[in-house]
Image (cartoon, rainbow, N blue to C red; front, side, top):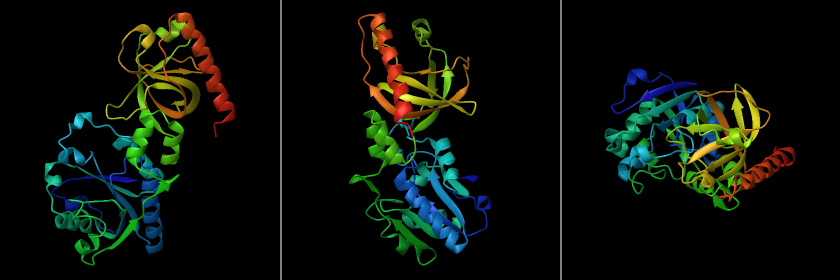
Length: 314
């Protein structure tokens, strides 16, 4: 997949001189709804013998419209992970547009002229709620007017699961609540993200449950506080384990940590990047009255996790 960074004003020399079917959207999560857009674009590209392209932004556009601190924004799939998902979906060209003040001020017609037509789009495919300016003016219903016959417009309807819209907001809410099974259903794949293994307090090792302390990207949305069954990919091999997202309440008021006890794993991998896959919520964290109580619960968590992977993991 060719990744091309673009910005306003558009540098036409960066744009391959070939017609494309262009999927448009921010695509945070690359969930089932987004996949429907991409797959529809892929079908059309195959039918018309055109390249399959996509355009996303490097940051959340509403940062500029809602006066949000960019450092406070977190994503289900930060840009690097979004690009990885795009490639898995068969995208051939990924345009990453810098969303800054210049981009935010563009009029709808200008945006269409330069960030659709100038990307050589012969078909633009997007979800029913895609906008490229003020929603009441620049929406999918009005896009054919701005297109002026230069490209076709295909709108993908709302995607639902159990009568609920499939959307990034719903996924973030489910993550906060620890509803990993729902998250994975909405995504259409198992939620995962990379993280660096860092030094912790070594409490787990002293308790007989050594842990990997994971530091995700600063803009990564993580599951809510709780204990989870997870898998971790280390050097292209997956290991099963149990994970605690907590403040280590038994040992006082501490910063939030992601600590994973892997089964059948004893390597020292500080500084290495691993991938954490979230599979099942087990329980809420508890402040124990004694270390012995904590150890007993950890043994039970290990049993519950192993039983989950033996029976329910598919």
